[in-house]
Length: 449
Image: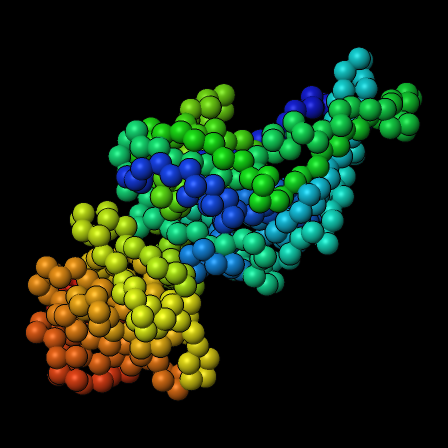
């Protein structure tokens, strides 16, 4: 055994929380958001041969309220740091779904009346992969502590959450909720306590008794822990690459890393990442903006409306509530388009709101998508007092694996990013990455797969 023995202590992972959005607290909305949270198990073999395992939290993105295979977590959940500061990515990453999906047994030796750890007796992980879904790491941020995962299949019962338009979207003092799987919760309910294992460890001619203590991790939806707090401030962490974070006082512990912090409307405003030592009220969440940038870079759709009636948040339209068409055939068409019904060769297009009313939102184009201010004739509806958008402004539709845009005789015009204005009823093909605008660059969209 090494001369320097380390006292046993509970190692807490980094964690953080997020700012709340202006909305009345809806306990039902918050309780529904737990369906978007999963527990992550990651195993990393380092270049020196050591194998490190750990758990964290993650949340789904995609079609809001529907099962998904894309999840966001912290970078440090799926990587381990080498002595030179470089990172090794985890070779095995799973989403845990059941009760006792993983059991960790700590081992220590009794020395001079105290329990001490040694590197020769690392923790033993009993992993039940029958209650896990393997996933791959799609993206690891070089600058900030987040990563994007893709599960082998859509995860049963785990749905995509809505991402807030931007991290710094609520005032100080607004309420937020931290969701995740803190290890402390499982420790309280499943830890066995230290027991003599019946084995001994040889040390300087002595036979030191080995003690073990086990703790299981429960990863069901009902095991998600929800804590509440308020936004304390918005700030920048210079030591972490000048990352913008939200300071809050919702309680978080090791294992919350990568979980969402949501507002009262259930929207994710940040990623739980950092917690100050010995300061329960000083927790920090990375702005959700960084994740949205990465998702757009990867061409991954998020905030896609689900197949039910929905309303644009009032905050997004300066107090004017905008509702999509809700009756008869229009509702049926909107549901198919929102769910991303495939057309032609099965490829799916998404419009990302790049400027204006729908900035930060995404809309799957499965069929014809009319855009304008008339709620009876359009699936994507602007408020009627918006002068730059006509009642029937333009139409976007897929055909034979391609996406097309046609101006419907708008007064202020439909414009491409190169400055070209479409003539009335002119149809052009749109390419992935291409932008177009309604009336001016203040209302625009970008095409994604």
